[in-house]
Length: 196
Image 1 (cartoon, one colour):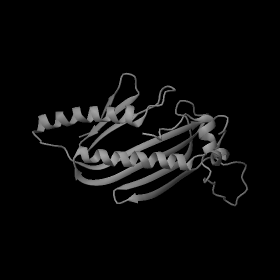
Image 2 (cartoon, rainbow, N blue to C red):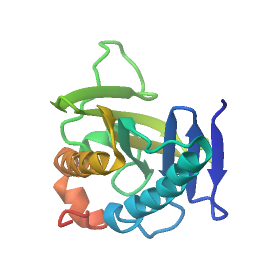
Image 3 (spheres, rainbow, N blue to C red):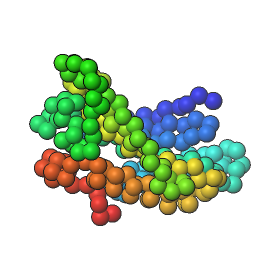
Image 4 (cartoon, rainbow, N blue to C red):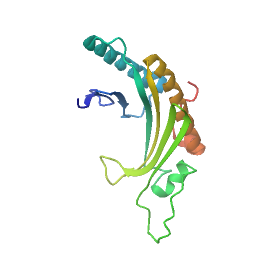
């Protein structure tokens, strides 16, 4: 079975379905930042519920079980006042450092750094910091800071997976807040959802 894409009319959300996966993607199209508990998770629950009901009805299955869960935040920072290119990455992520090649070069053309951390037996964080360019504007540099939580849960029900999503969300927010500059957070970004 191929992967099917169901794209919303406003192109903000996308549902992907294949024989072993149900994925809900959201993309920022305006200045309003959706909250996980208020917008993203309820939308996922709604569409997963419809999908589960369809599967139960069509296949005469009592309940779908969940084996692997993922939750990913992708933060793209365009060229701006506080990030003009790769040389400014440590302004946003203070612990980040470019690798010194030991070779004379005029400038760095880019980087792609990946890190993995195990928080518990069923929760791992994979963090990617990379430079790139906007898809629509190949001459506009961008910094991509991606945090993905994943966990193999072992054939559990959706209600049990919901608890994992809470822990994964909390871990991603904590990682983002601790890894990025407090000054940049306060001066340039919208307040993060830390009280939910």
